Image 1 (cartoon, one colour):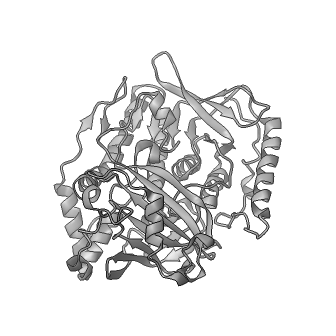
Image 2 (cartoon, rainbow, N blue to C red):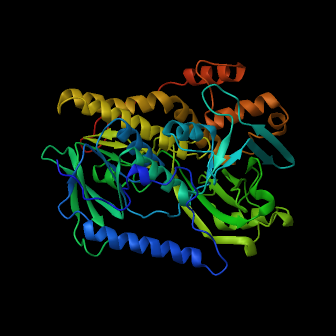
Image 3 (cartoon, rainbow, N blue to C red):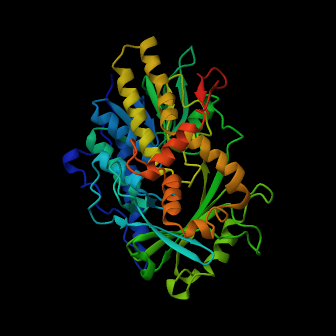
Amino acid sequence: MRELPPDPTTTDPRETPRTGDPRETPRTEDGQGASRTEDAREASRTEEAREAPRAGADAQVIVVGAGPAGSSAAYHLARAGVDVILLEKARFPREKVCGDGLTPRAVHQLIRMGVDITAPGWTRSRGMRWVAGEHRVRIDWPALGRYPDFGLSRSRHDFDDILARHAVAAGARLYSGWKAERPLTDRAGRVTGVAASSDSAEVPEPVDFHAPVVIAADGASARLALALGLERDPRRQIATAARRYYRSPERSREEYLELWADLRFPGGGPYLPGYGWIFPMGDGRVNVGLGALPHRRHGKADLRATLDQWLARTPEEWGLREENAEGPVRSAALPLGFNRHPLYARGLLLVGDSGGMVSPWNGEGIAQAMEAGEVAAETAALALAHPRGARREQVLRGYPVEMNRRWGRYYRLGNTAADLVFSRSGFQPVLNRYVMGSPFLLNALARLLTDLTDKPSRDVIDHVLNTAFRLVPAPRPRPGRRGGRPGDR
């Protein structure tokens, strides 16, 4: 097996910056922060070009995409002693459209990875504040045995960088600036690696990276999945999110993630089938955004106009005005509720947005991506303990079965709620005055939306929710297309 030449982003673990250290480029009045970031990226390109592989490389597993899903998978694989290559088309640090708010479920995954969440740059949250009309309520994160009782905020500008470097410290080989163009397959159509192109002018042609198992964490574009004919289920919803940063010292150190459920289409139209958020970043900024499904009757909302209309309602002293904005409004698609299947086919496992794993209940995707990355890593490591053949294939086919066991009923119920309730009238009918006035109903709804329950049940809310999930019929396996294995819907 050939070894890749050293990559400047693949440092000796002893030289890796302490995980959790803030790596965001300082913002200065003269704009030099952005200039220094570009200088650092250019220096990285120049150095990497001198040692870039020109004939490809081998590994036991190739992970495509160094977002939360890919870095989580690479970390857990490396910890299991698996030789893993992590390919990332961008260079860190880089921006990503996200709310930057992490629920206790996501914090749980960070702790499992050993990320230092006490280091500077992490902002803790005690819970959520919901706003619906005249009603405003605060809901603390539950104190469960399975999850921590706090959330976090961290900009994706350096969050993904932290996770990728954590994977490197565990032994993964990270190659940034390498875009996976297509899967490599053998005569039987089984994936044997990927062809990837470098952003360096000194490597003008794609090169081949070989591995018996490939994990696709390449985001909502899902290039590798599409190349194998693993298409999106058209019956599943795709939400859209838009976000922008604002300088708001007053709101930046808030202890609660604020969610607004009473937003309307521009011009006083129907309720938005989604919600708005204001998440404190702890550095003088807030992340402000919207997430919405297409309305059943009125289609997609103009999120930029909706954002402007909403922020005009907020108090002047919050500073959520154009003159305090940092950067443009950015948007992205949110593939919901297992909207691509099967999650495994012919040597390729789908994790995160590539597999449509964003929660249909609340649009959360980071926790799900990291958890799926860990499950995919465990599956791949177990499979590689067997020689190539039927037994290894049997283990790999267990990945969609396990993901369906964890989220199948919950996502099926969420997809139904999205179709019948959220896409028609948003959250406003759910957050009526009876619910907003009942601590029990509020806490039950909060745990339902964020999937925070203990198993076995610890209290009445756990018991009610876990019983409800068990009553939901399990999704039935459906065949994939173009020779894919059966998958779960």
